Structure formats: structure tokens, C-alpha cells
Image (cartoon, rainbow, N blue to C red):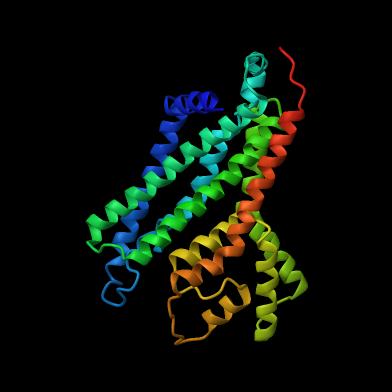
Length: 312
């Protein structure tokens, strides 16, 4: 497995794909930090609590926040690293020659997946380090120990989230012999979850609990609860809720109805949660993402181990 791992790792580092993905992620990080530092100056005097985390969460008028860029680029990077991991070897005929060597079949899929996950981890850690470094230089406020812990967990959740999309891309790479079909299938599923799942959830909630100008607070909260429950089918929503609760300590609940009520109450006191409470808050989302990643990789592993491979 280590031979396959180091070979795939070297191929990733020497490929133009890695250079382009890293450049796009770095550019997005620089744009996000520029927007955040321009918007954060007006909030320093109002509230200096967790001011360093605001670099990652504040959005501008023209550009979204760094969290949005992360939720957008992590699936793209993961899919790009995994969509042709097996199908390209099969179509070129290298897979049969590779397995004719004294290499176990599971070492191939394990080495390829671990090498892609290593590249993804390097990109995520590097991009977050760029934002931290530019933030320190721009606002001049160092992060506290709790903010550092929140950022570390944020990076870990981002890597696990990327592992899910990479495992899904590897699965489609095994199911489909053509790399183009594998890529389009994975990208299509990501587009559905990222863009259309929230619309479908809202449509179902509106069909169950229609809202108008005469709707009561109970009807509004029921509508929000139904929409939030259905929306959690999407791993994109699970990741968004998890990182928001971590990097916005004022988030006291991820229940859609409670969040809606809190936004309707004017003059509410936003008391930040301690790190342990925020971690407990995102624990269901985190375990769900881990389970999805494990299920996708387990299916890929079983399918690859039982697949008949013939020389072309």
C-alpha cells in the first residue's frame, strides 16, 4: 500500500491539476480575507469578542464569506482528485498489469484514497494557514486559545467532509469505466445537494404548512422545522451547520425553529457558547458526515474487491 500511496502522491504533486486547484483555493482565500478585513474594521469597537473568527465568517457586499468558499471548493477539489482514480487505470489497461504484480488488490484502492486525502488535507491546511497569517498581519489581533481549538476542529471537519466527496468520487470511478461519466455523475449529485436540496425542502415545507401574511408564529416555526429536517439529508447542509456553529460561538442551537424564533426576537442577548458546548452541538452533524464517508468508502472497497478485471 505504501508503494501505491507514494506513487500516487508524487503524481498528484507533479500534476497540473494540483497546481490549478491549489491556486484557485488560495485565490478564494485571499479574496475572502480581503473582504473580511474591510468589513471587520467597523465591528472591532462594537465587539472584540472572538474577533479573529469573524475573519472566516464575515461576508462583503460583492463577495461571500470564507466559509462559503470552503463549502464550494472542498467538494470540487475532492471530486477532482478521485473521479478518475480507478477508471483511468482501467481504461488505460494499467490496472490489470498492476494487479499482476505482487500487490494486493486492497492496497491499490487504499493507497489511492489515502494519497488523495493527503493532498486534500494539505490544500485545506495551507489555505486556512494563509487566511490566519493574512488575518494576523491585517487586523493585528492574535487568536485566543479557544479560537485556535475551534479552527483546528474546523479543519478536521473540513477534511472529513472532503473525504466523503472523495469516497463518493472513487465509488463512481469504480462503477463507471469512463472517467467522464464518473465525473459528471459526482458533479451532478453535488449540484443537486448544494443548489437544489434547500429549494426542495422549502417547497415541501410550504406544501405541508402554507404561509401567508396571516400565518401565526407556530405555523412559521413548523414550516422552518420541516424545511430544516429535510434539508439535513444533504451533506452540504450538515457541513454548513457544523462549521457555522463552530466559528460563530453565538449559535446556541441548530434547530431551525429555534433559530428562526431567535431572529424574530429583537434585543436578544447573544451569549457565546464555550467550546465544549459548541462541540456537543455539532456532534450529530459530525458523526453523520463520518458515517456517510465510511459507507461510501466501504461500498467502494467491497465493489472493487469483487470486481472482475480483465486486460484490455
